[in-house]
Image (cartoon, rainbow, N blue to C red; front, side, top):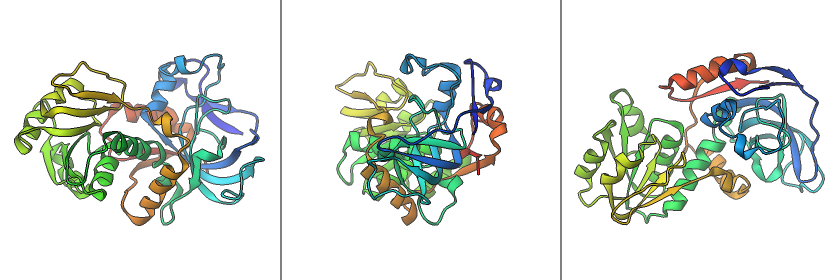
Length: 314
């Protein structure tokens, strides 16, 4: 089967077309004929060697990709009646496992990490949902704020930030979000109650809206310590890139790892159904050929995308 991978860590051009053996589904697994694989920042970390510490004993070639959408074409023993051949599905692909990542014509994944694709959208759009939406879900669950409480979301125009705003509004939180001027209408459209200008003064602008400080922040733009002045005494900051502090005034800094809920089928399925209901809005910036993976990584590094890049393996 065709895949996109690398033999040595490095710049985008290390990504190349590979011919790999066809994988087979084992116990508790399904094989998916991939139609679309989303390109995420974690794929860049794999390419540059940032995940090497999580892959002891693994040998190249390495295949990136954590988000896939496609059709089940093999079901392993012990999967049960929930999944069957021919179903359109979305999956979280544990690229650090023995089968490699989503940049491939076929992937084998644990059945617990697979749910039916949202109806009413393309598989390319569906492929953008799993990791980003689950990250937003985990962030809100970790904060556990009561309805009506103020929540600040930075990087609200990005994939995780946008989903965090939409999920928070659906749960009755009062959402304060940041945005560049060109993204203000976009973020307001997600349901943010207040949109402040992004930048070095974002904490000050948030404090102007909530003088006592916000009890929770989802730091989608990785502003880390710059946000602390906006947080209430004893509040919580959710970090997506591992920052742990130090903080002040009893503020808790909570790094989250989406790998903790890769196999939370119920949470994943709920998100897929929220896409069907229009609560969550997947965004695709561009659909590219697999051979354009290096170009996709360069586009991602350049920043400014308002939607995910997707590799089309259909």
